[in-house]
Structure formats: C-alpha cells, structure tokens
Image (cartoon, rainbow, N blue to C red):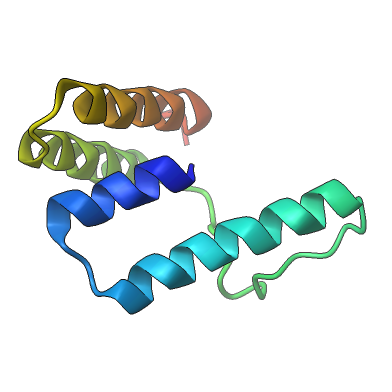
Amino acid sequence: MEACVKLIDKAWVLPQESLQASLDLIETERRLLRSGSGEDDLSNSELLGPYDGKVIAELLWGLFETTVKLEGAQDRKAIHKLALLVAESLTMDS
C-alpha cells in the first residue's frame, strides 16, 4: 500500500505533508491491526461509508489517470494492481 501511495505522489506531486500523513496513517492502522486491540486510529466521522457506483467509478478513474501520468511500466502495473484490488473490494452493487 505504501508503494502505491508513493506512486500516486510521484504522478501528482502532492505536498510532502499529505504523503507523510498517508504513510503515517497506514503504519498506525497496520500496527493497531497487528496488536489485535480492536482500536482504530480514525474517528467514526473519518471512516469510509459505503460507496455508491458513481464514487467507485470516480475512484477507479482517478487511478487510471494516475497510471497515465506515470512513465515506467512497473509503476503503471502497480497502480493497475491497486485498481483491481479496489474494484474487487468495492462492489458496484451498493
């Protein structure tokens, strides 16, 4: 996941603070998950609700646009794998 966040940053040249905040959140959530504590670093207001088809399509389109901005085949392949994971995880049946 971290690699894909870094590739998104590479494609869109995001502010360093945004990149670091995303990486920190991933690490914190991973640590909490491994501890088995049942805690979550995100407040209920920050948790993702169910996505409808339009939001899923926009998310996948954003990943497509990110892929187009990347030059390396390996980078594009990594974002493609992320898009497949997202498409599999989030269904359009919502």
